[in-house]
Amino acid sequence: MKPIRTRTARAIAVAIVAGSLALTGCSSNDGGGKGKSDAKSQKDAAEQQDPVAYGDAAASTGPAPEVPGAKPGGFINVYMQSDLTHMDPGQIYVSDAGQFANLIHRGLTNFQEDEQGNLTVVGDVATDSGQTTDGGKTWTYKLKDGVKDEDGNPITSADVRHTIERLYSKVIFDGPTYIQSWLSGNDYRKALPDGPYKGKHLPDTVLETPDDKTVVFKFSQPRPDLPQALAMAGYAIVPAKQDTKEKYDKAPAALGPYKIAEYKPGKSMKLVKNTQWDPKTDSVRHQYVDGYNFTSTVSQPSQTKRLISDQGEAKNAIQFTDSVDPAQMADVVTDPQTKKRTIQGYQPYVWQLTFNLDRVKDKKVRDAITYAIPSQSMVQADGGRYGGEIAGGLLAPTLPGFDPTYDPFGKLKKPNGDIEKAKELLKEAGVKEGTKLTYAYSNTPRGQAQQVILKDALEKIGFDVQSKEIDRASFYEQVGKLNNPYDLYMTGWGQDWPSPSTVITPVYDGELVADGASNYSHIDDKQVNELIQKALKQEPEEAAKTWEQAHHRIVEEINPAAPVYYSKQIQLFGSNVGGAKYSTESSYIDINDLYLKQP
Image (cartoon, rainbow, N blue to C red; front, side, top):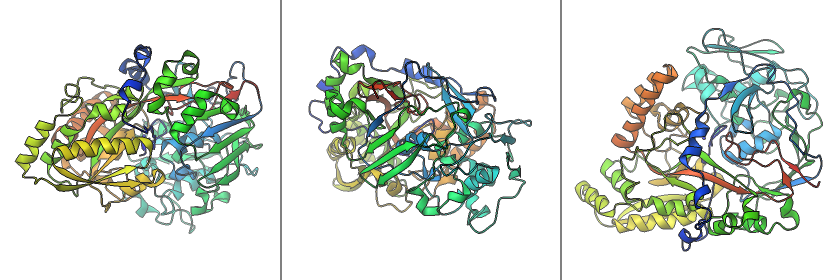
């Protein structure tokens, strides 16, 4: 789903940040011959296209199935490059915070994942994935007994109402907007500008809570994806009694198996068991370890080096949302014992060079830059074949209906760019030599390495590139401002669930051009907007054709963002960590099943 933005539940917009310290040696240190056949391919991605099932009450009843061999006790060490972007559920729409959310937050629904990576939406705080009798216009949820926050307060329908209504207030500016806009339109904030904080509520014709155990969502048109949307971390429960508005982002109340015991912003965090969490109410999570020690000052190269060595505390450590350092990839994938301690998968993300259409207005200029991008070098800076594959379009191989032959800019034929074609287009556009372009990038090893590559390519075609470094934690906030001062920025996006609607709508719908929204290019095309509205009202089979039509118009006729590469994941964990596997839901290590072999 932003960073990358990994944005998502299923996605996912960090931000994922995989990085590289140096460009030199990347191509020779991406695994060599030994690892060539086992890097994840588009065949693996296709296996992640399976539709999500909706689970009944039996599937939603805890406890979660035991992990074979799991033992209780001990602390897992978590390595991160920087602090979490957010901890308030309403603000969570990026990968690091989404991964963290499954440890301490709970929503009405959640994703349950089997050993093959197949996903089922189950009831989390709710008794099942939801009931509808009118094709998805009205959804009813009943709440489980025994769900409490960390202070022992029972969760009621009033807390669910509060959770949804607070998303309308200005307190929340950085999370998903699906459900709010489905309930109240794209200008949803006008329906309840102060949220629930001044005693006003959404009408029962939109959101009804007839008793303490029942929540009813009422939409003007069918919303069959509601169970999946509710499983996003951004819709996790914020108990009304615990809500501290802006302050909640630094000290949220836990409903999940762990709670925050200590937090030093920018440095560290300690999670311990939440004694109010009842495994009988949870069919997804476990509480095997005593807690997690987060350190948010460990660079990606240092994480990789520590985990390769597998000494001391590193034996009990994991990478959270960072990947193996590309410069050390060969050390990982060519050593059988180290490679055994990796998880790999095809992520649902596409990295793209986004154009600020308010500043880069000429399509010929955008096309020229697109042709000039050396996509292969960009991939090499992010782990080579273990980090990604050259992208032809803006929809990932994990989406149903993906077309591997779609490549309108010829990137597969000329992976290192077409400088001559780019120069021709700039000449036709009348662009003068030395024209300035401002490029914003994240201060991560990957961002820094790719900045060098892009700057060099764009200077070859005559631009004077002004590079502006932005702190990783605030990168998407900065480029998400309508009046940002940047011409170009690398962004990533992954689907929030397996549908093009969760990519094309949030990122390319002109109705969603706003501060803090995910339409980073500010594209507002009448035809694209109409195709989006048409697809949203169609059955999946028909909608697929409409989404494809919208995708082709966006890429070929407007070009608001140049496709660069599809993202893959490879992460390391220590030898004493058990239960580690790749999660197709989060696209990282599955945080729900971990334990220590020797606590």
